[in-house]
Length: 402
Image (cartoon, rainbow, N blue to C red; front, top):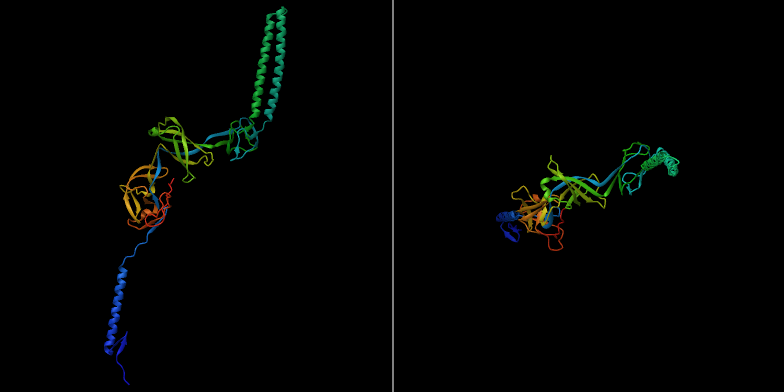
């Protein structure tokens, strides 16, 4: 029986001593080859995934209407308001309407006790009747005395006394009629009526209260028109005149804007502040505005349609100011020249450095480094359909922030 001392490996047959070394050499070469391949693959850089940006992170440079002028601020007030007060003394019998209730002109708001006033009215009517009868008697007496005087039966002095009595009776009638008219007015003043169409904003009394002349009962406002009183420096008067439009942002309404107009300008300047008072009216037909709200506005003395973006897209700290632009799928920093700024809509004109249609980064996206790959997804602009800016998506028209 023969024993073979050779080794067979991968189809190779080698003698026993050399076989072990051959196996070790081949295994070592394989390990080295694998390490070289792994090292070369690890050294190859991987492509960075693009940062996806939406409408909250990017904005397109577009022509927008910018407005500039003196800034106004103040509290809205009803252009027409009235505080209804008691004109007679007495107890409040009834408070007919409540706060927030709409009323029509002449509608009953409240009633005050009128018993004593009606007694005075009855007495005044009686006085008028007595005075009227006395006047008729005096006239008849004057006529008889005139006939007797013409006949020579009585003297001229007697006639003059009759004429004087008639004058006195006529004066007494006039006085009685005046007292009657006053009594009627007093009775009518116990009924508090709405002075115009409006809304009851305040109720100052309750049924059973004893009121004096001048006691406030109701406040009625006309909500269809608001007024703002504000002051501006006298140096800006050349930009102001009645009828000029004023844009307002009102607290509690977010980015919604309201339009008003300068109604009048105070003819005097405050010597202490150097400011002049303006009165601006704001139509409120939808009754969306409420009295007491804080309003901040701007007189639209200058209007221009220019390429503009929100102020948040511009780095004002740099000199000159810069913006981050997404172009060819990468972020680049571009110096720009600024122009007119709209303080109310927070838009700024870009005079140079970028063109209409360029996409700029804003908000947290401004922290991206230059060269960062980005994919901007803006809503599609109907006039320019096409692929997304900077590597994907469909670019939409960015709505003008107002």
